[in-house]
Image 1 (tube, rainbow, N blue to C red):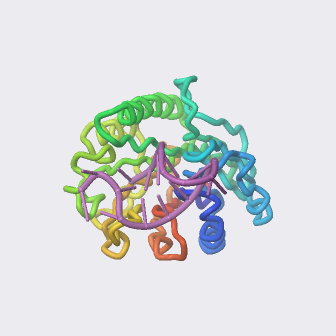
Image 2 (image 1 turned 135 degrees about the vertical axis):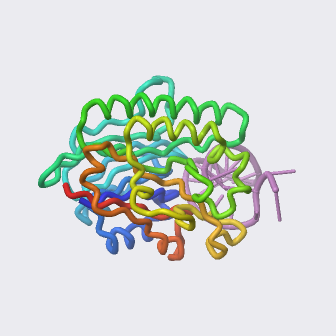
Length: 260
DNA sequence: ATGCCTATAGGGTATAGA
């Protein structure tokens, strides 16, 4: 089962690029972030016509997550538990039944957190604490589970082309990285780093200052696999070439292949 | 370099992003 994450930066602007990539990459499940659309505005029929089941959790203007799946999406839930006053659309879960294993799939768009200090950074850290609690609950179920999406976290210096540029940024501050490690340390495997070592592997390049042409990227889109899910992993790759396509998102897809 | 671009909402420019 091929499961991909892709921050598309607006479904209306990305419908062609997303459609082309779906045709090329043929994921069984695509976990999308920043659809920047309300549920009624999402072009559901377009993707249903391509053979995908569609579940969205959108909001007006920004944020918004969605799941596209060739297999049925079961037990869908929306919103990260732990704060009923949080109205930002950043979390969706569903179960997909493979031929051998059912996979619980969690899609997230973790808050950016800039500027630091300030209420946006406080929200990021509080959101990550809620994520840790949800990750603990999922871990205790001892089922194949993955948490994927745009984490807005640069885990290590080698995950940025110019780490000095990010020294005081919410994506790279020690408190942000520690919060990410605390979740990993519950027993999750960061899929890409379990398979590929070394610098130069990025998932985001800014639109500005020729970041793509200069390969000034960062790796912020991740997969965390529960032990039962990590045992099924056969591959994990970044589709970096998508960044050089026509009218691209500033993020590119990352995917895992599971023996599920 | 304090968003240098891009997208959305909306009908001006403001907000958000990383």
